[in-house]
Image (cartoon, rainbow, N blue to C red; front, side, top):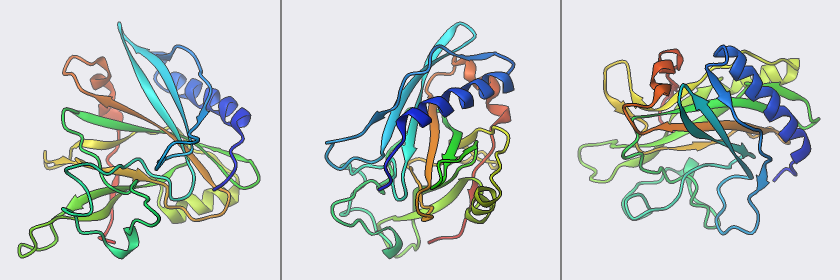
Length: 238
């Protein structure tokens, strides 16, 4: 677990949010820039720090949930529907020491969800804006003869791990880009339900910071902007 520099993270989050405002020509406005809070003394905590950022689109408001993910942090949780009993867990996603954050969570009632990459911090404290490489863990039936689905790392959100490492070495940033985590794919099939998002980058000292927003109503004005969101990259079963 890497120790977090909350002062630096708060400063860089404000920079990233202002860049998103500029990218959307101030049609999306963040009301204020709250500080990160550490997720301490929480049983089975899934991530390292969290900030709730209010924003406005047209006459509506919402909250962007921003998370700081250390290596192996993930957003999942055990539930009655998704647990060790009714899922097959591959060796690469085995839950060690009671870590249940790899269990995908249901997205029932969510039309679509977007992942807003904010930045990554390397071991030297350098900031790489909008640079994320996150795994999306889902469930998949791997054989008609096996009645239980398996947990699998199905998508990459943002850059590939190789691209991510190259950008960190070059000390660069990239342009902001929002990615779907749940919604309809190019074949009009629902994907990413259930899912968990994981920082599987094992480079020492790297922290990824990213935001999430779920659209649950057909009247949400954010729907106007999802045409600019990108699909995550499908990867082979792990």
